[in-house]
Length: 251
Image (tube, rainbow, N blue to C red):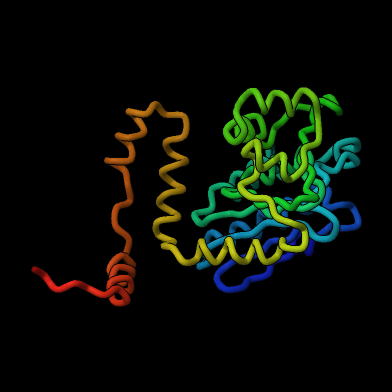
């Protein structure tokens, strides 16, 4: 597997790092091919959470414009969009950890995460209109679901850059931390996730995905009749809780 995306496993968490720091991690086919290989491997493994981040100064400056200019030759149509879908559809929580630039194609990639954790130095923007381009990797669908349709229109029409704090205030980021606290914040977040049931995480992701866009009544019906139910670790978790809780004798 090529080194365009590095993988590091620690404590049931897979850390994937976009690794073109000399190019501000600009997204090219090599990165997507590496990412596809890692994601397929993760899907068949035992990881319980995934963190996606960038090496060096930023998450990613976006789709490599030089590749666009000379013309790309992906292995199949809509290849990059399909890779992003594979990432989004992983059964475990995916965290997009964003520092520095996160522009356009990189924003589309980050939006595949279930949670976006940003630093104060993060800079988010959709600049498709600056280059006479339109989204094809999911931005027109995922961005308004996070920030609302009219804030998404503002971002798409103005090509404005938003800080990590602004991203938090508009709901684009779930949390924003000081740059110096980035690694500890990632570790704390993954620890909170790992403390809970991976069965529930996978089942909840599936429910959210399958009911997205349904009416309330249809969504409620789907939850009732298609819920995954009780996980294999429920007895162990209840026993661990009750075992450390003082029980009052029955009256």
